[in-house]
Image 1 (cartoon, rainbow over the protein chains, first blue to last red):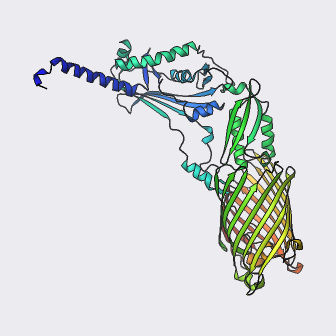
Image 2: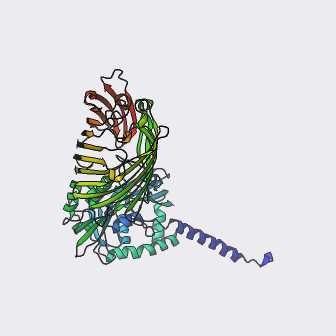
Amino acid sequence: MPIRSIKPWWLFVAFLSGMVLAMVAEAMLSEDLILDHRNHRLEFSAPRTDFFAGQPMVRLRNAAEVPFVIKTTLFSGKKDHVFTSAADRFIVSFDLWETTDKAYSVVKLAAPRKSVKNLTAKQAQAWCLSQMGLDTTGLSGSEPLWARLEVSAEDPAREGSPLGDSVNSSGINLSILVDIFSRPGSQPPKLLEYPSFTLDQLKSTRGS
Amino acid sequence: MKLAFLITLAAGLPLFGGAADAALTTESPDAASSTNVNARYIIESVNILGSQTKALSRSLRDELRRVVGDNLDSIRLQKLASRIKDELRVAKVKIHVTRGTVPNHVLVNFEVAKKPVDLKVAKFLYDSKQGWSGEASATTYAAGNAFTLGLASDDDAMVERYTGIRAKFERDNLGTDRLGMRFEFDDFHEMWNQATVSQDPSAIYRSRQTFMPEAKVVLIEPLEVDFGVRFARFRLSTPGATTESSNAVVSTLRYHQRWGSGEDLQEQDLEGSYSMDATMHLLHTDANYVRQTAQARYKFRRDRSSVEVSFMAGLTGGETPLFDRFVLGNASMLRGWSKFDLDPVGGSHVVYGSVDYTYRYYQVFYDTGAVWDRPQDRDQKQSVGAGFKKEGFQLAVAFPVGAPRPIPVFYAGMNF
């Protein structure tokens, strides 16, 4: 193709497309954790992440109450400087006799203790995160910030002797020992991070 | 970022809108209210799947009965599952809770999960006088049947060291939980201590095979009786000697009761048995004798302290082959003494008693007993010892009291 046939506005379109692609890529990477800043509070949500999934859901469907520990952290200036953080325990249960999908109940344990009932799984998870906002009083709008959300399910059945029941008065049960050492460790906490941002950026994205 | 915000806003709006539709009324419950929404439902029934309830202690069975009619408490169920697992010594007990047959009721099933193949080290011992002993087995389960194949080399339990295989078939339920059956086949080769050989060379055998079909009947829980026959063949070591047999009708009356379990503050365990093995011409036996054994054991634990008292008495006839004679002076009875110093060929009479006290992992014990053939040979021996004991593991040192050369004996291992 002759060089003179390239129109200048083509270059402009190519540049713009690149920017849009970069924005989409950034959005794709960060959309698991969503931040919102209102009235000096940083609110967290993660609609694409299901932290009930897996073993916690099996226990919930079996009428057990499953404790979740949720921790939110805001870093300022540098990524290793914690500006503020919050942690709380939420007890989730699933109503066996509820015929609709709104069978989940949640109790927030830390004061002020609160509870909600008749939620779907997504609503229950969203409610837990809505209780985990962080106070941003004292932060300037242009200060670089990072945010992190950690969610882990506690399993009381995993507590106890490290060798479990492999050793007892009838001998060493090698099968149980093999099972213990080949068993995956306790489920690691779900960790979501929000890349570098400022409060002004959050305001502008919300305002636009 | 704008696009990101729009996407996230689009994703977030329906979510929060939905929550609003669901009328998220935040309430402040009192501190005593349950955190489980199912706590309002009543337990209709409790079942144990995959095992027999008779293997559980009375206190645990009572607790399981008490749960029925109460409100669902998942923490309580988890504790019960843990106790069932401990008492049945199984890999896992799963809890399944489902809707009941009437509204607002639930059914609770404890499912006992067994491994397809169970590998177990049933005994492992180092004795500073006798050396190593050990036994390991693999058990597989199919349709309520258990098949076990094991290897053993033991220089502790009898006057001989026996090495070989042990195969077993067991079924706990023959139409009813009260009736079970088992077949055992052993094939062992023997090694002998010089003290035994020099005392009675004609009684020494090179190998022995045993086949023992038995039935188990639960008379009235916790009283049960085992009965069957035992066919034993042993090849004598003396030149020109043939294979001899010792075929007997075997029976054991057994009582085992437990009060409390590991998670209770207090726990008691009482076990008693009376066995009689009688050889019969009808079974084409070469040796003729009747062997009787009475044993009792009582254990009391309160918090971290426990006391265990054991007793055994036995009597057998003069033609008894060496594998059926009584032995003291090993890692479990009259610890600290050597069985070859007491009676290198075993005795036809035995009386033994023991007291063990354990605090946490620390153990002290006192053993006393006598093994003899003729009344004038009866000589009561005593020993004391101390050690560490944690579940099956044990490390102990025992001293023979009044021995001409009181050399301590060290024991290390498990389940000896």
